[in-house]
Image (tube, rainbow, N blue to C red):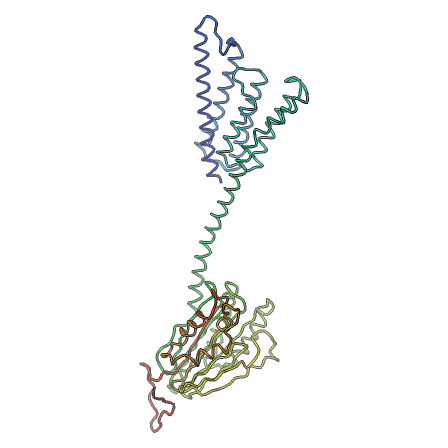
Length: 469
């Protein structure tokens, strides 16, 4: 506003000062030309002291605006000072015009001269309606005092009517001030919102990069592999996947622990909660790399109950621990959507929730029970967050758990690690419009053909879990 006002103020004072110099020069030329005759007069009026006074008023008018122009050109001023200076200049302009009329000077334009100056001012100066009314009120008040008092003849209803009628001439200037002020306000708001949106977008981009850095890299070699696809509803979300690798003491293939969490809510608040849970999970697995799934959920339940439940923040969680040396998978589910165990022969088992969601009940009520299933070569474990099951079609019907199971049963056998992309593609096709929740799909699998990390076979034992493709 300060930069805009300074630039417009120089334009206004420069134009008005230039008009003042031109008018003064013309009057001076008329005076000089008329005085060369035998009976010097202008427009039928003899040149006398009043003509000299007119010339003095025009000089004053010109000097006033030019001084304002120079004052602003050579020194930077704040917006408030420039507004007050512009108001003072235009009010003084009105007083000069009214004064020339009261003194009955030649070329006196009276209120009409002020209206012209005021209208030009509203075209250049970024006044608000309140500031424009302040100028108008001061000048019209002085004009009414002069017209309705003995200064210019005294009170009369015809004179009162004339004062009210001439006051309407300032309405165009007030309308211009209102229109320009409203437009400027809209432009300023748009500029501010656009700039702020850009800042927030950059901040969210950085936050998403930091948030996604907490997610593990997929593992596509070894006895146990996993892969996933994550689709946040917004730039960052409240779903999270934690992985912990722990080599067994006997030198056999490492045990893999997987934690899937889904925080209530979306966007930045949910992402901030995920950051806190990330630190807590890192601490738990650093203290005990072989911690059991039930114990993980019990400790997380206490953490959420003590730190987040009072803010109505709850978490669903699924913890899986796979030990390839034992061909088993132990899991515990705290209110999370059921997972699916796809065996090498194509059969599908549904693995339901085993306890309450995290933070809903106290330690005594929370039962961190676990379940164990065989996990042989060629088996797969599919987990997901409720953004997949709660996807709605054009009729408002949710995909649901049965819908997810139907996709798994009807689709052809996917390449190893291909289920996350396939399931997310089906969910997107089913969904009507953009996602209304974060969606995370995970696949844990034991490949039929081992990658570079091959486990040495035990002598005298044949791997009974090996299935021919």
